[in-house]
Image (cartoon, rainbow, N blue to C red; front, side, top):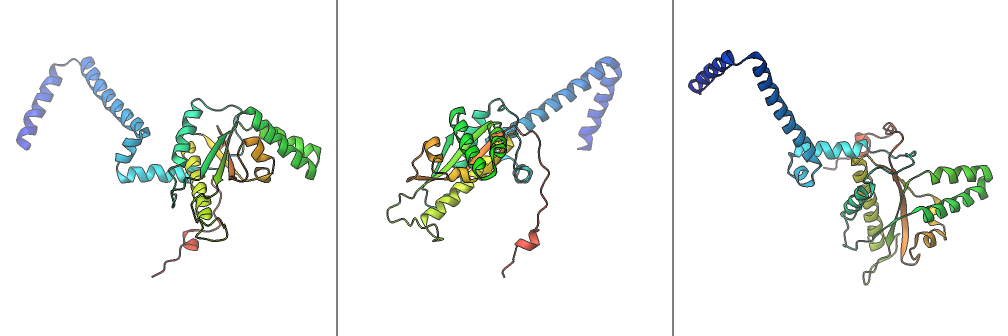
Length: 256
């Protein structure tokens, strides 16, 4: 190996001796640019699904773990949705329907609200708040909700498995498993959108279960029920990480 290196060094020094300083600088600058471009392309390629899956385990873990830990519930959004938001939402829903689903019932359904149904839901919420807290509170709630740009309602279909148990109080029932699957789907959607810089809030306020809500959204109450509404958009600010009341040692019990 040493015998190969020495002639190479001699050639390099000899070449640099005759190469003008400006040309030498240009040569090294060009080499550096090529290296940086390769690094840039390698970083960008991690946006590609296949490349991420083929990446080293440490890289995949770092990417997934940080995406989970960095996600926050967003309460304040920019008034308009970001570019390509619908493409990102479609990808997020695709991630949602790949959530764990024991019986493969695929119970999740999604409703993307336009301005008209959104306004009706906001008006319904205004009426509920006005009835309990007065006109000023109702108007404030209406204005705040109307400022939220993205609305995705998530529902769960009732079990259609023959002989399936629809009792939510039964921990082994199909209905409970289906609800759990839909909750996993919601988390997948929120994480997928977060990875694209789109914030979310999973809301389960009373208006979601109001008898008029289903009519506005367009699903049959005897076939589906609401898991929640996902608000989404560009965050105006990112909240800091909330302080956890319990640590790992408080929630993990080792059973030998």
